[in-house]
Image 1 (cartoon, rainbow, N blue to C red):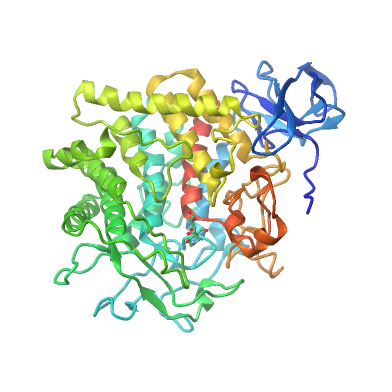
Image 2 (image 1 turned 45 degrees about the vertical axis):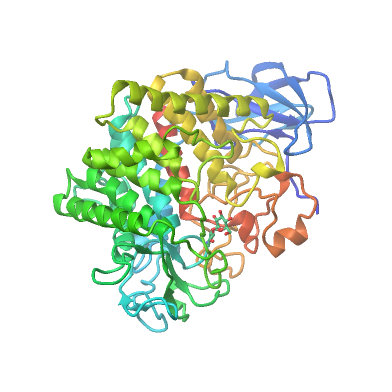
Length: 575
Ligand code: 9MR
């Protein structure tokens, strides 16, 4: 299988910020420096130079050169870069490049909402649908959901929340990081001195039905999931009271397509887990401080849930989800919850200032460890979420301690920067196969989040440039010439694995909405379609924009939340 990868000059197909870095990658057999030309939409040469040969790139196996045209700053549309007889996809140079991405990346969450009709007037008629999983036939959930056999004697109303991904499952663990990143997208606009355009996330800014309620729309979106997360808490009086059920999903996998309202499967609550409980604690603690100015009763409810969840996790510190519990839904199993403990303690400390939580933060081995792994943080490794908030959210930490924490973010950003500089495609991810795994696009973005936070903390331009350049890979500067965000770039993913946006399976259905990011290249080839089609692929080539490839091409809330955070940062770097 040889994919059509288009022109051999690889650019960010969306474009470049006027004052930002501008780099491209040329695939060529030539080993000597090559001339390049930047052309405007009329075809006139507006800049030129010579490329830098980079040899064979490990992740792609290609001989490549890089082109740096960062000296060119004039805004315009329809630029192309020409080198080695090839012309790149067109791109813009604009300070408003990412303005719309901010709301597109967040619109995904609204359209993923469960338990409510989706309003086509807000997001387009093709995405309108009736409410799913409200106990209306043929649905068997989620208003009165029983437990799996042998798990509990009660039923819970766990309506609402977001569908996790291309399936209809709802998972507390993964809902946790997604919620945290939406809350942090908002919180950054309050805490970062470098944040601008905070109103772009404010009331009336997003396509959500709550617009006009005087609460910032991004908080409204997060609340939709927070409400669900709190419904997953084991009721008082039960043996594991205060813990959170790990997940709720269909008893067996359904096929594609399947609209939520048509799903006839039995829904079940799966056993509580410590990881889920700590995800609940961390996110509701963050909820409490961010909602306090808008809805004190809700903030109090969140804090109460956070305290009870955290106490329950301490009482049951080693209740793990079964890695084999994967029929009808993902397992989201995690055998090490020490990072979730650290994250939850950090959020509770930042919200309450209480010494008990600070003591737990200090006692955690993660507090002094390097929590910024080379391949980035994610749903199963959440210590970085706590660390980033300890570094950025005002608190009573001593200056010495706060500086140490901030320095750990800068140190990590320095490492991601040197990784990025070593990659001919300019991404903050190493080039070995171990760095290309399921959902890896979100890890790349999360490394960019660390770079961006380092800029927010230090004002150092190289971190800002690193964060900005990192997303070039996501928007097409890669071996496949593939933008991984629907609707963004000349050649963008649009056949992601989804039961809802299943156009490739049924032409009457829509593609995913603009702003939906695909999981990305995955050398593990963990689905049969990819395994058969892509056998032997070099890591960066292990992706196909086909609906059946769930391990390379699904949509997911925790991947879009990384995109949402970065989109907001990127927009702030414009004009
Ligand atoms: O994103 C998850 C990835 O990190 C795991 O390797 C993978 C296999 O366990 O599961 C991914 O999450 C999927 C979940 O299990 C079910 N809903 C779709 C998620 C995205 O593919």
